[in-house]
Length: 149
Image 1 (cartoon, rainbow, N blue to C red):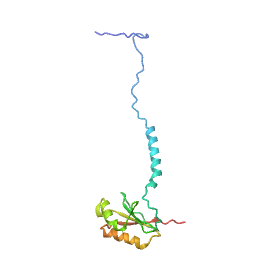
Image 2 (image 1 turned 60 degrees about the horizontal axis):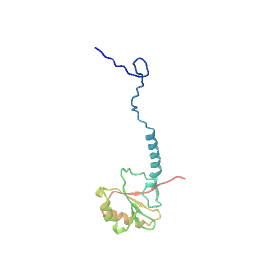
Image 3 (image 1 turned 45 degrees about the vertical axis):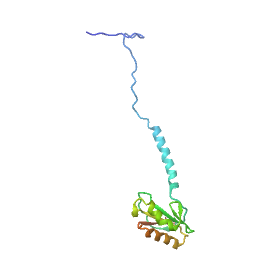
Image 4 (image 1 turned 30 degrees about the vertical axis):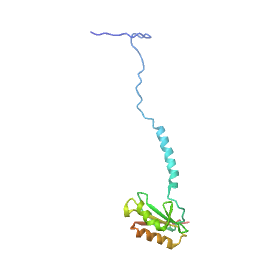
């Protein structure tokens, strides 16, 4: 036994014709690509500005760069003999306690020493001696590459 139900409509003998539209499951990635390209450009422009920055005229050498995976502690000595940790000026007597306080890896922390090309050699050596006396032995000197003009 079967029963049929007739729909009242616009005719057509009881069959309803309608368009079945399913859900669109596609993801529109165009806005995502636009955002990613803008972020890429922003980071490409901003990355050089994020370098640690006491303005120094570094000596020129042919030495190769050391591989680094995390941001090291940077000590800078400017041409007037002022000492900086990252960008903060510090007295030479406070250098060792401050290094011990901020080092995350203990005495194995890599420390980069940047000395201005026109700074007093003795000032740079005094900073190196204080760092070594504080127990840090992983010390690297930062230079600029030689440009062949």
